[in-house]
Image (cartoon, rainbow, N blue to C red; front, side, top):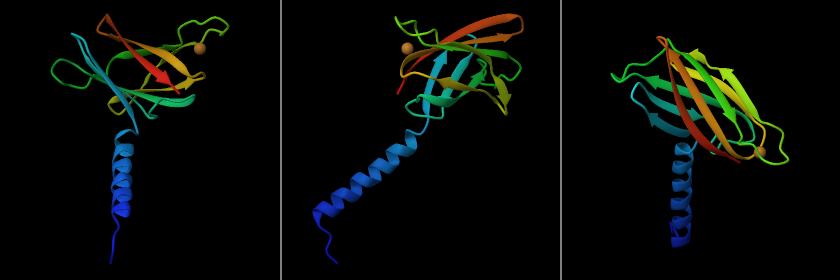
Length: 133
Ligand SMILES: [Cu+2]
């Protein structure tokens, strides 16, 4: 059996692409504030103009999952000339240990995600920015 250098090269590139795709399947970001560590993931990477599922994993400073908070998600596009306001607020639903919402992102470009976590009479705010394709 004769394997040419070209065939070998193509195989290696294909394998690397497959490995890369499995890592890139979710968009992930993390924010750490005094009260919480927030891991966000979006089921599309990059996020796309369509419905995208946003999951939030919230942990307290001891690393314990927070499941007794009210989590309000505000996602919006910064106002642009000639664009109608695109600004949405949704209460996230607890699913297992994660808070989940479906974001309907209707335009490509920069979007902000502002998360308000209410718990024990206190409200903490965390922001993420995403680039929608
Ligand atoms: Cu816009």
